[in-house]
Amino acid sequence: MFDRKEKILIVGLGLIGGSYAQGFRRAGYYVGAVTRSQESIDYALENGLIDSGTNLPDREYISQFDLIVFSLYPKTLLSWIEENQAMIRSGALLTDVTGIKCSVVYEIQGMLRPDLEFIGAHPMAGREVYGVKNADADIFVGANYIVTPTLSNTPAAIEACSQVGRILGFGRIVKLSPEEHDEMIGFLSQLTHCIAIALMNSRETEHLAQYTGDSFRDLTRIARINDKMWSELFLMNKKALLKEMDLFIEQIKKIRDAVQADDLQLLQDMMRKSTERRICFDKK
Amino acid sequence: MFDRKEKILIVGLGLIGGSYAQGFRRAGYYVGAVTRSQESIDYALENGLIDSGTNLPDREYISQFDLIVFSLYPKTLLSWIEENQAMIRSGALLTDVTGIKCSVVYEIQGMLRPDLEFIGAHPMAGREVYGVKNADADIFVGANYIVTPTLSNTPAAIEACSQVGRILGFGRIVKLSPEEHDEMIGFLSQLTHCIAIALMNSRETEHLAQYTGDSFRDLTRIARINDKMWSELFLMNKKALLKEMDLFIEQIKKIRDAVQADDLQLLQDMMRKSTERRICFDKK
Image (tube, rainbow over all chains, first blue to last red; front, side, top):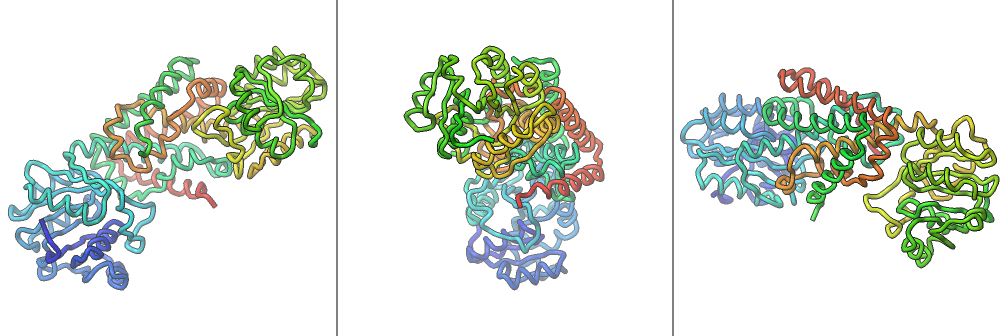
């Protein structure tokens, strides 16, 4: 558990890191930041997102914080902890916002100093724009916040991490194992991004834009993608993603072959199944 | 060209047929209807969508109409014209609302009496609900209306068919050949529906609904599908649809293999291409 006397450090001031900073600060916490770009720090200071910040982290600065939230690309996160964990105050709690969990959480827990604790979290919120200048704590309102504890996490850390979700105003706070999380995200998020990318790669499309209805637009909205971040996320969730992709490819080929074979019955069966399953995804 | 003295017949009073009826009637036209269900006729009469209607078409009724709009499933449309064209007044103009064109337009033009003219049209509007009780002429406002003339159409018929689109308030009226139309619809609409169906068929999903963000919801909205109608549309556009499905399957397998092979570079290249291509689909 932590209260307003505790200081929070955001490492990585992008869209999500900046939005976390804003949310914590609005809730009355002291918020510091470590990020590579001095421009981002200046912007965040001028706009009241943080109380202090540095792009040259040292022991004196880092060691004042009780909670550290990492909002970095997955590989950068792993190397940051490896290189800088010596500067962290004993007893501090570490958490993250990474969109995949197994290959981050177990890796960090395996190398972390025994007097520190890391617990994974995934705020399921975002926008198609990037950078601290687009930070907006309101994106968390009503969204899902997933805490992914492992056997090495303490009840106190699990509770503190859930508290982070409540402070930031998430709509629902859920616990999943890293494995359950990665399977869910492999299907609901990564596979759907792969589909949108494949669709936009499959032909020249510019002359078709004028005929587009909302269905195509909705389906490909996520084809605008941060290639550096998502390619890392895909590869770091390889096992789960490949499983979901193979299941999907099998089904799309089944439809293709049914069209080829004039198999009206199979097409209708698959359509009825998709209709029935889709119903439970309607917003309540 | 036709004016308000001419009478319009809607064959098939479903969502689209009923919405056409409402739109024409609001514009001051006399609107009749032929449809199988007496209940639909009663509803349309009570709610002012039509001036008259019958579920037992005879020569006396049919022959009073100058413009006939068919809003039927494709195969039903073909057999209706085959069986009933003898009852149509000489010189009448026939058009339709079918979502595929080659296998409907050429078939009808090939069997039609020489004193009648058929010109294909596709109103690119719809809802996820069905039946005349959901009819609503406002769904056409701002939507695309595609006229698909062939070499056997007269300039007068092309103009009259475009006029239908203007009367109903469509946002943009475009001419395409049946072939261009079917290729465009194979990619933008049919392939995307196949993808949504395949995705919902690829695994049990009920326990995942609670984690779903807007991306997945947007992508699968069209997985709720009228299986009888869409399976017919798929098979009647087989050649174009198979071509688009094969292009897509090739690309999704390319992504799958890149993930398997840790090919970060290829993944990023494909993401940048999809991002770049998607930009021209943003609403102006």
